[in-house]
Length: 205
Image: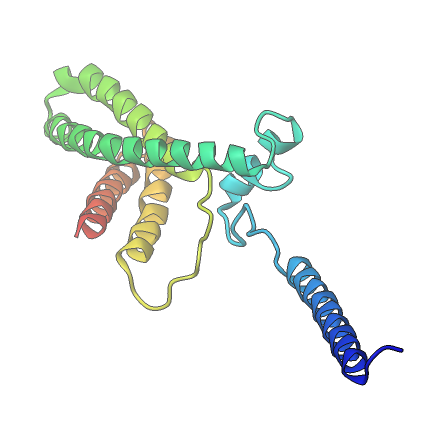
């Protein structure tokens, strides 16, 4: 016959095992719940430029053609490319500003009657256009960041973007009226230069 105290020990051991088993099941359920609620961070920001979405969006041209499939590894490469493109954008921005200053000096002399500078003015205009629109393209078509939150209130980035709209429009008008209307061409050119220089200044400081 088994002693009474042995029955108690077996009962206690059984209760302990049952308790541990129940807790283990609850732990499994908890971890399963955590696994199901934790989601991977989004690879693309909610807000993108139209030009960025056109190339780099979930259904963008580079995604649908398979050139840049949307994956974590690919996004890491794109962020490196973004850094290079924006750095080049800044360097070319200063180069374009210098070319605009030179073009303004040449244009001023041309309008004052020095017609020998016409060809130089035209060639410099081509240099400015190539440099300007390359600089703009590097910003407009750069891969998007991981997060693009809307900034409240005034900021240098907002001012830079607003001025970019002004000088881009002015550059288009400058090219449209270069052989149509001298006064509109001149006004648009000075507007482009002023807003462009100011855009660089506010972003710098």
